[in-house]
Image (cartoon, rainbow, N blue to C red; front, side):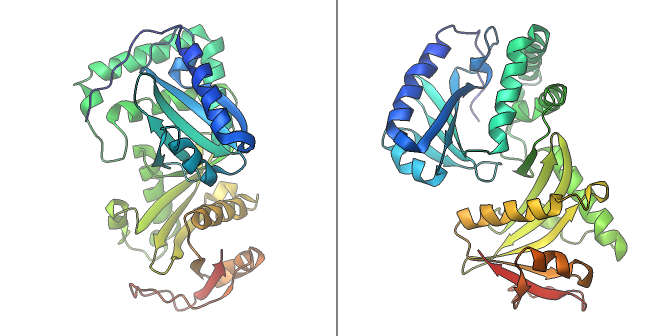
Length: 317
């Protein structure tokens, strides 16, 4: 993995953003609603990787791929954020683009973090010191963790969460498990709410390291607190299954479960999946029926044994 380079603040970065933003707006036309300079290069006085981070807010994210690649900005996927369209360009001015549909909470999160650092020199300098310390720790910038991100990136997590709490960020967010803390909560939720009832140690933790095109583990955040978890499996013929979904006991009966299911469905539909399946307990049956699910064969290709009381439900996306 290439070593991470941090350089002193460059007053040309805002100008570079304006030039690139104009090109992006022209490329996207009426699809573009707003465009923002984010990340460390957007904070005066903050040392940063010399890459301009940009958020583009659009009406239709999927249609931006062709337009942006036509001007040399390559699509890279969603990374750890469902419904995120990530792009990059390397050249005279390096760019990282983050395209979101209007209303996505990641827009507010990034602006909230940026604006807090712009207004608070102490926090800005603490962040700069943290980045420098991380780079000095056994050359952590070259270390790749077991997740998709470097130890350097993961090492900033606690600071970023602290700033977001201080700034009052409290939106609901939907992320793939990536950070150590997210995996720990996933383990805790699975064991506490499912396998302790058997009781047995979680027999399916191996799916944490399974290829992501077969299993995905996602969490629902409220602000910086994880309040929900789901295990999704991908099958052939564009079928998908929710193996486990749970909202923390203290957050139930507040609409979070309904919201979480709707986000998962929207994401799966954007990925091209045609149906979603679940084996519901009798106690949860009415909840799923209210979300548009009806009785449908589960047809589990793996043939895992289920609870004899479970009802096979499904929904076309």
